[in-house]
Amino acid sequence: MTMKKRLRYLVLHGPNLNLLGTREPDVYGRVTLDDINKSLKRLADELAIDVDCHQSNHEGTLLDLMQGAAGVVDGCVINAGAYTHTSIALHDCIKAMPYPVVEVHLSNIHAREAFRHVSRLGPAVRASIAGLGWRSYTAALRALVEQVRE
Ligand code: DQA
Image 1 (cartoon, helix red, strand yellow):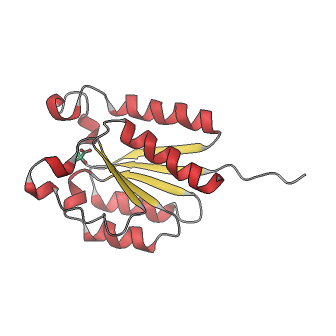
Image 2: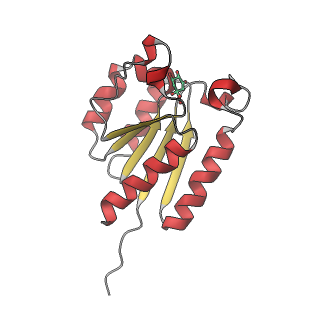
């Protein structure tokens, strides 16, 4: 009998997402980062996969985590926060990784200020999901797993 390898995913939360719950609740709601990570863990149990969640306010740390996951994970879900709109380094890193990356946002960045309409990550990622609140993350994770299993 051949044992199938358990799928593993990296979830990255970028700058200021540690403040969820109290940060601009009219935009981001009252859900905390811990709540989001718990929802992701629940989904991971349901799908029988592993998920590693990290938050950092530092661009370089996000890059190190992504690079360190090469050969370890089957995909990544990233909410790069404001680095979405500025980081060519994250764009380049995503392009260099052997695994698919889905960009997520709690808010609909296209319906907000003009400076949020451009994503530097957009051209490098497999897909982007914005505007579903915490469900942007679970939708991305579920889709990544389904793409492998179908
Ligand atoms: C965000 C949208 C970004 O424009 C913003 O800088 C964030 C959060 C979101 O999840 O809606 O920090 O990525």
